[in-house]
Length: 84
Image (cartoon, rainbow, N blue to C red; front, side):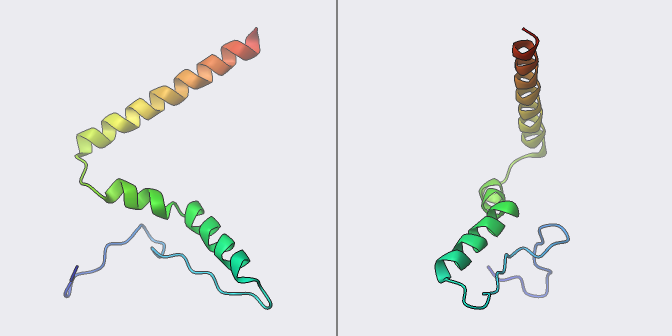
């Protein structure tokens, strides 16, 4: 995708890529493990999945509301179990 003179899309104020520099005498598998951990922490894969297709703002709000209700329902169930 060519952007020409336009700015590249950013993921907030952070850089959108994860970098890991190899440490002295570090095994390559360990380096890969650190990289994958960093990618998970920065939610890179989740962002790619979320942005793969356009989602209307109303749909985003609805999903966010449903997620919030799910979390509250689960918390309420845990309270009931702990109170008994």
